[in-house]
Image (cartoon, rainbow, N blue to C red):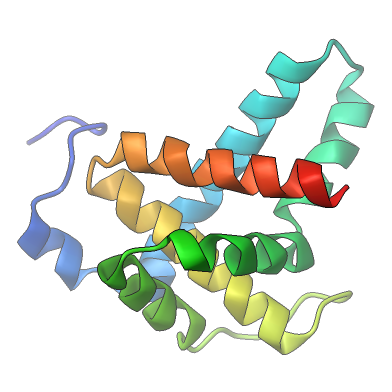
Length: 137
């Protein structure tokens, strides 16, 4: 058995469905956001939570994917395409179905990168999200 943080081999990674990738990517993306917020300022937990939600909500993730798209490789775009087209059950209140599908695509991308051991690429893409988000604010 390989370690939990060891990259999956390419064949095993290809066997995962887009929702499995998104399940992992959801945790990866949230951890990136929480780490970023914790490093940025000393704030109360309630405030940190509200700020994190502003990053990880489906509309915010859809906007992040839109900003990232020009920076993606063809293979990364294909992973996003699979995530966007995954058959999700329902859509949370407060977001359009298109936003939810885009958020699933973003999560699938981050899950695929994480499971493939591409931590440097995760950092590069998340830096783009932060940079573009800061300029938009």
